[in-house]
Every structure is written in C-alpha cells, then in structure tokens.
Length: 523
Image (tube, rainbow, N blue to C red; front, side, top):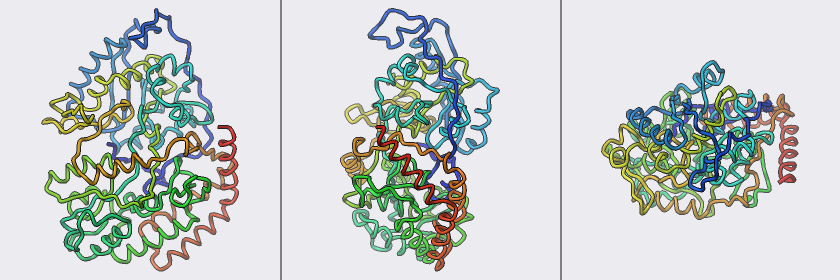
C-alpha cells in the first residue's frame, strides 16, 4: 500500500489531514458523443465504439516501479491490444518526488492521457487549476461502461466538485482507513504486557508510559513532525469522523451516533484533552525532546528497534506484521478501541485516475482505464505480477500470499487506483487482525446513515478567514502534537483559539453550517 509522502501544511499539524481551499475553475467537458457505433454485443462492453485505430495511452501513476514491471507490462499490453486496441506507456512518480514532479507533469508540454489523483493527491487543487477533464455522465456511460455499472451512485457523488465530476474512482472502498498500534512485545513483555491484555486505549497509554525512558536506546513512540499520535490518541480514540478532514470540522460517533452535531476540532474538548495528553507524554519522554527535528519515519525506527510502537490500518497491517515477524521481531497489532466504535468506510476517491485537459485522446484513455479496472486477469497482472511467481492466490478465501519472487513485484504495491471490485486481501492467520477486521466490517457505518458523501466545503466565501485559521493550525499544531508547550499547553491552546476567533472562525463556521444545510436540503 501507499506510504504517503505528500504532506500539506495542515497534514503536518495533525498527521492525517489534507486538502485545498479555493473555488474550482471551469474546464472544458470531455467530448461525450460516442464514436461510430457497431452492432450491440452483450459479451463486448465496447461494441458500440469504433476502436479500429490503435492507440498508445500514456499513463502516470504514484508509487515505486516494480523490478519486473517491464515484463508484466508487455503481458498486459498483449491483453489490452486484443481487447481495446490500445497499449499503455506507464510512468511512475515515487512518493518522495511527487511534490516536485506532479505539478511539472500537469503544467503541460508532455503527452499525458491518464494520471493518478486522489482526495489527498492534488485532485481538488488540479480541478481548481482547470487541469482535469470534466467527465459528464454521458461520457462515463459511453467510454467507462463497466465502471459505471460497478460503482454505486455515492462513489460518483464523492468525485463532484461544484457539481461536476473529474475523477474515475477505484471500484471499491472496502479498506477502512482506521488505524491501531503495532507493538514490539519483546519490549512490552518486560513490563508484564501480553497481546490480549492491550485491549483498550487506557491500557495502551499506560504501556507507553511504562516503556518511556525505561529501555536504553528505545522510545515508546519515536515521534516526528509527520509521525505523531494524532491518529491513535485523537481521531480514532474518540471515534471522530469526517470525510473532508481538511476543513477541521468533525462528528464524534461515540457521542453523536446520528451525526447531527458537527464541531470545529481545535475548539473542542477532544482536542484539548489530546494536547494535554501529548504534553504529558513529552514530559515522560515517550519520545525524544528533539522529536520535532527527527527526519526518520516511525515505521523505520520501529523496524530498527528504536521505537516500541508504530501504527497501521488493519489491511496494510497484515503484510507489515508478517514482514516484521519474518525479520525476527515479536510484534502484534492490537485492537484498542471502544466496543461501540464504528468506522466510516473509506472514500472511493482515496485513489483514482483523471484525464488531463491536454490529453488528445480522452475517449480512448477512458476505455483503456475501464478495461484494466474491470478485467480481473489484467488487473491481477498489474496489481501483483505473475501468479505462482510473484504471489500465490487462494481462491476459496480470495486472498494472496507472497510468491518466491515477491521482492520483484509487490502485490498491491501501486495499483490502488485501478482496484477491481473483487480484489483479494493479503492472507493471514493472525487472530487479532482477523477479529479486528471482522468487527470493523460488522460495525461499519452504512451509507444511509452517513449523509455527507459528496459534501465538499467551498472555502471561497471565507477564503480570508480560512487563511488566518489554517496558518494558526500550522503554527501551533506540531507543537501541540509533540507536547512542546509543556505546562503552558492549556494557555497556548486558548491563545490559538482566541486568535482564530479574531481571525474569523465564527464567520467560517457559519458559512460551513450554511453549506452543510444547503447540501442536505438538496439530497
């Protein structure tokens, strides 16, 4: 899975938020008139299109290129050539380079027909710059017929910005983003902890405090500006939910199960308790005093034995735990959340592809994308390489395990935006992870309960106010997350809140509520 290197200013503050804040610009809709029709064929979803001219579709994706990619792409192109008379010219943009290369790619000058994008990866920003082609419903039905038939209407609603669609989402939102701790029990057992006993946030907190400053060369959680406890100790601890986290407005599922009481995060008691607890952790040396200058990820430090805890979701955690155990580490991923904890499904636009406005063949790009997203054999090649070599597939459970050449092509290492609706999960016999995934699935918030899919706050009416508020979040946020204010935390928090109100927070929230009510009234 992806290891996000793209971090916006607010994300640095909380370790989980991303977004942009200006009114989208208009862009020219994609041509939505079908090419010359051919007789209908129930076995060929593209029989209504004239695909007689061979095309090469230039595609940019996010991630690291697998060692065996050239071999796999040759096999894929043989399939796409036969199916839709088109081949792929595929380029990778590593996470470490995306912030510099992505804007250059979208500046034009080079041919690009498909480019990876997501709610965390330049989607709204590029729409605002008129960088992506608008996708009309007629265009989608004509050139993406299988995707249109597969996705629920809620998925397309999520893609809308000012009522228009510019992104083709992945075909599934089956992986909840919620995280839990992975713990090195070689360390935890020194303090009397067993995996089954770390079953609540309070126990987890005490474990951190017990380890803190008591094991030479190891910190309980080796934090940094981009690796804080904001997920575990704030968002998931209090079951805070919002599908557009960048606006900093949340609902607490535990206290507000019908999602009727939105609140601004930084003025809430949840955030106050979090900031005070981070100051407590800093004083106890849960992380080093110079954590703000740490440039290593907590996952790397965990693997090196320098951090006793890291975090992951219960999908990525399967492979993470397996890999760490193979290296000789005694690790477990544990579920520490309240019994009434319920998760929101992941967003469909957490991964996807858009067609740049300067593509000269948007229709054929859409057809090729539709095919590789929905033809299972082609998807499995792109997602995992060759079955039996790079991965092993278990049909009875629809799961995959590493093959003998897995190091040359990691399964699901980059193809997130083209996930098939029936994509396989990693195989695991870990009782803790399997139990957590079952609980997450059974307790998931249903779409009919969460009314806000497709709601995207328009910052334009309060752009000046948001500029002040977001800059204060950036200025103070990291210090709160790393406990740097110490005994002055509460006073500093009030100082920040006062300046937010002086900068227009009341007006901002009034506008947010107005847009929310208008959105609900129009559903």
